[in-house]
Length: 240
Ligand code: COA
Image 1 (cartoon, rainbow, N blue to C red):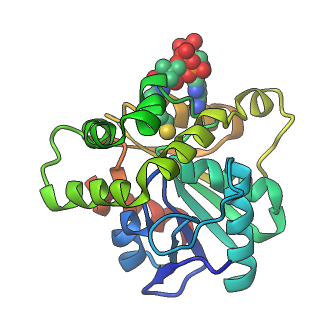
Image 2 (image 1 turned 120 degrees about the horizontal axis):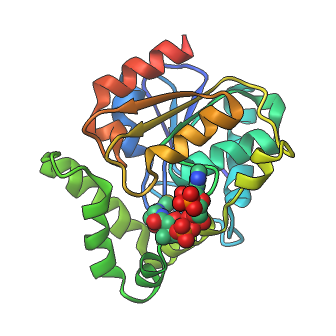
């Protein structure tokens, strides 16, 4: 399958969005830092693959994309996309130079109410979920509406599939007991007000895997949209 992607400046970086989102969340990074923003199957402009049910299933498509487009590069993933980035590395270490996780974690349990809501009460859950995504100080209405539109475009089935894949994703113990090691440079970026994937999840990678951890002030889960200048500076420092 050919995934839909956006590139403005060629660079060996692949940006992977999170649950119910699209490549649009990375617009500031694609424009300034460079690289390819992709739509996972069933999101944005990419056709769906109905066999997908897990993070690993999504990661197989990312591996194919990297091999076809750039050969080898950095995977930069947000939330579910961060889980997909980890799995991309574990499936195909040869094609990953480094990993950047933005608002993500080694385990991504989802509140049962959110999971239930995306399946059974989609519209109301989609609207409510926006309140958890951004820090209350962020007021750019067009940006917030863009995310809501992405979620509504994905629809109930894809959103439920994404959050369910997050809920099942759990490498925490395997990292802790060194059953899994990451032998490429790793950076974790998180907003200090992120309530969905709190800074603790990023610090775990610092403590257990020696990842570089950057905590961005006054930002929530959508830190790459809320504080693009700060995120881009940290990314450029790490990638170049
Ligand atoms: N990295 C490091 N530690 C983690 C972790 C991660 N990715 N995920 C969980 N933990 C820790 C928790 O902090 C907790 O530690 P503690 O006992 O010292 O407090 C422990 O592991 C158990 O956590 P968890 O498995 O998440 O179970 P829980 O019963 O504490 O909570 C939820 C379950 C769903 C309530 C909780 O995960 C949550 O609030 N999640 C955020 C909301 C959400 O839905 N996020 C969506 C992510 S896409």
